[in-house]
Image (cartoon, rainbow over all chains, first blue to last red; front, side, top):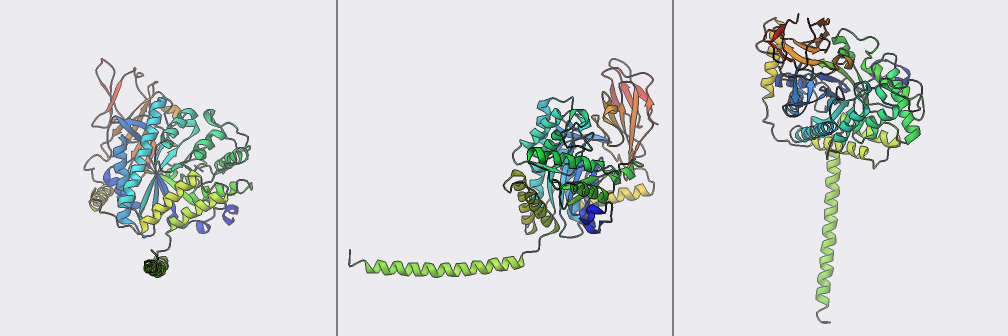
Length: 305
Length: 218
């Protein structure tokens, strides 16, 4: 509660430094780079996301873009994540630390893809993540778990295409959880009446993907230094609580302070991790129907280059 | 039948008595073992506590305790708990120490300004993709994208628009990511133009049925 009243306060009232995790845009993926990234995170324990880019066909199978480098297929992505886990296990600073790694893709540039292919890709992603988690449970059970992650943003695709991908993931037997590292761009900032978001989406549609699907664990993007992103998510939560009786539970916040520092600054969207966390807790507390006493994960994204 | 009844009856009672005694002993042993295990079980690690708090928080917020989402998190928690006592087989898939040494050596060479021993980035086909905060969805719509490794070890991600505008993001080591000024091709690329990086870090454009031209990426 103190945190809710002290936006941007130092982190003494929430998670320890080890629990303030780093997430990454995975632009560099050689085995040495991936191992080094795991080792770099040896001081952390908690949920984090390793983001790859848009869904893609690579070498004839499912894969993802990785921005500055060549696209990678699911087998190559698997190798990368395994090496991250190996590096973490090799260097881990405290035996009580665990990483719950979300392996992420997005809904970027998928409007031109067929429904059949998107459903296939969602399933392939779920299968990759499930197998990675099984591998981690076998060889590194006291170190890491693997889940899926998804950066879906209304501006990036139609809802219909995003929904097809999600069904491909959700319908896969044994699919692990899926961090919804999503934005609510264009969604209402003062009403909870299923108002419109960007690109034909609505509060209901964002809620549907970020929460209603069983795998989804919301860890949304809280970038704006005005706090408006947190307010948008609180209003989505309020709409769902009032209209469906199935309100959201937030597992964390994603900020981009590190990435903003790397690219030379972001105007008004560079919340530090604690600011993002405090904004969300604050806005959730503004209505008893959305109040959530604690939000455990705070993770900040940077470019891994 | 009557003459034979007592013996079996006594045997049964004796068997019952033995079974009762054994059960008591087993129960005592089990209770002792459980107490011992409870005492010797390590305290939950922070992530176990966090997951339990999340599960409790969800249920307190009204999510049914038997919901699939709660079950999924309980599975995660079970996996975490099991991991604490596991004795996993050795992972022989990679020599992590050697990989870390290789990465450290590359970092050292980079810091000393040495030329990279090999390409720092993979090269190959790329699909157009938003670069968060630097290259938006409207800028990649209809574009052709290519990844061009540079001689200095950096990488250029170039989106060639149908209008001939080159929108470029530079990726360098240690998180150096920058949008570079846009440039324009002399003529807009025709449909089907193949775009490949040259060894010098420039772009080779080959329109269908025509000779290639090289476009410098300065």
